[in-house]
Length: 278
Image (cartoon, rainbow, N blue to C red; front, side, top):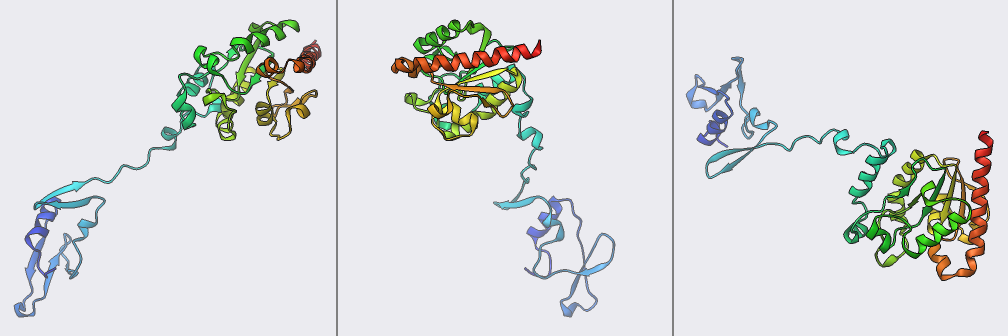
């Protein structure tokens, strides 16, 4: 860069609205020049640096002799605009919408037609949690329909409960392709939704149907047979009973006796809980 401002540099500064004064030193043969600042004090001009004003927050591009100002990217939005309202503060309607809008699990989202949020009495004392909706459940948008749902309804009726008196949900809100088991990461991604349902419902007893659901809720790797037949506690403190899912009972009718004992245990816990309020 020469000691004097060339035409392009002057064009930069004029475009930015910066006035530049130059005067030649008394000894013209010395080649020494000074540039006057706006304060009127003479300062030596750096030999190889652009004017200070060029180090502004804007970048400048030169295209075909013209100046184009490239604005810096805006600052990141406030965290409150990046992160929606936490799941733990949502009511039933907002929670159901959040589930419907969820796109965390790419494979499930790519294959689903609708989510299956849950169904039943939102003031129920009894919560039933299964593993994941099947094709029938996805089609109808309701948990435990078809033959498995009919068997569950019959089992509930046998202990004096109608489906309208309980609330039913799953650890997964989407139908896994080919009816495969839920993956651990999928169950973890859906966990906040289920935990919020439990917090809103405040059930007196939880009946968990299926090994994957039981392991997820109890943070255990134990087998279903070793988990059933006893009373566990959900992290919220609610009594929890584990049993076989209805689909398994359709395939393995000899296990219906075990499932019946589990339902009777859960019913007894519910009656005891209600009796303690009297």
